Image (cartoon, rainbow, N blue to C red):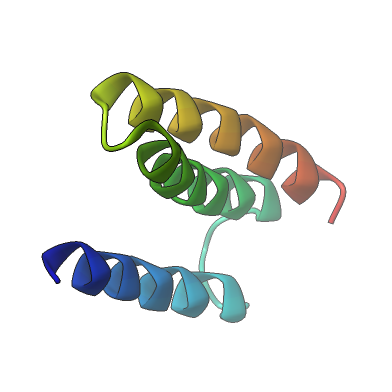
Length: 72
């Protein structure tokens, strides 16, 4: 139950961050942040909660998000 609540809170925060044009961050920085959080959640879920899986997912997600943000 705590995990579901944490995911819901993070998803809400990400939706707020990505939907707001007044955030003083570049699209690349926003993409990296969103990608890192999403990657960490995915890595944690895939690896069964291991720290290495979470960190690996965050790094991969951050890189992908940054690249996508560059092109926006």
